[in-house]
Amino acid sequence: MTTDVPHKRLFLPGPVEVAPEVRAAMSTPMIGHRMSECSDLIRRIRPKLQQALFTKNPVFLGTAAATGFQEACFRNLCAQRALSAVCGAFSERFALMGQANGKPTDTYAVEWGQPNTADVIGEKLASRKYDLFTMVHNETSTGVMNPVEEIARVMRDFPEVMFCVDAVSSLGGVKIEPDRLGIDVLFASVQKAFALPPGFTVLAVSERAIEKAKTVKDRGNYFDFVEMREYDKKDQTPFTPSIAHMFALDRQLDRMLKEGVENRFARHQAMQQRAHGWGREKFGLFAKPGYESVTLTVFRNQNRFEFKALNSHLSATRGLVIGDGYGKIKGSTFRIGHMGDATLGDLNEVLSGIDEFLAKH
Ligand SMILES: *Cc1c(COP(=O)(O)O)cnc(C)c1O
Image (cartoon, rainbow, N blue to C red; front, side, top):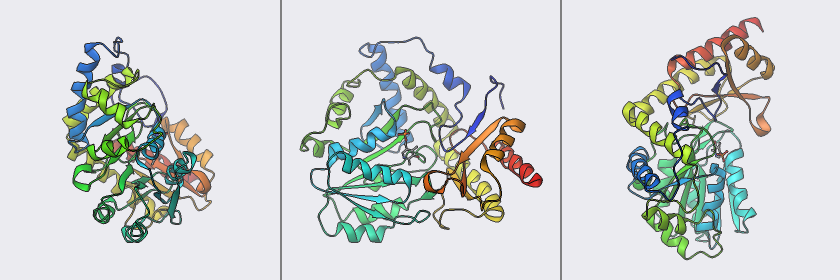
């Protein structure tokens, strides 16, 4: 560890630790969002972000939490009826965005801990009722990673359906190739595997999606993809963006590309192996075998201890915190985020802290 101001280190499934030099980039002296310096900044970020996201499509910088872009998928891309795959709390919220915005939305829900599967999605879409499909790649409440490659293969049979993927807690830590997979909107807020402060979202949006949006009424204004694309062509954003985040993103993309995205993915894989190997024998994992997340682990607590006592121990002895269970499985599960800039060494420290606690309880 490099020296840093004393603070609680975060091993939550977001927000996560932010490197001191990235935090420092946020206090770069301010520029105006219509100044050429801001367009220069956008032009610096764009090719790096496209490289990190494996896309040649437009990439947008969104000043909002990712939830805003869940809403945007419905507002921009649903004129008819949506199908939303649900497998936990975040995908449930994504589906609710349809209803909340007056879009007829059907859900394909599975039990928590289970994945959404390609065959069922294919069967449902075969009714030809839908023009939008939404899913969460990495369900942060259950630790399930959905089989996006298989789902993408099924989506090829439904070119009339817009394909929107919330990859909020996996993008930047797991390889997802939107152009190859035919994903129309792929998005993530940056406080998870991108390891930036919260409140900002990156997204890759296909030209096809922008063309479709042009035909959809009542898209709203703040999250209008058509408007975002028009400004993007001028290397601007429609409204005043969080320029501090953009400075930080520029710096973090440099760090990500310097590490090498493939090395970054391998580092996340190694942490997953370690967390899962350790947790499988001690607790059991919540996710169905074969569908476990790469960026976080949801462990079964089996009522062995009170989570608060564990976190107090970790905080007092090692200056770090992990995540409680989420939603209806809070209490019976707990979570460790092993994503962003975290290393295997960091994770080992977390696990040693838990082992130490368990020896006393
Ligand atoms: C954290 C998370 C969200 C919510 O992100 P915000 O930036 O808080 O809106 C949505 N989906 C998933 C899968 C998440 O992990």
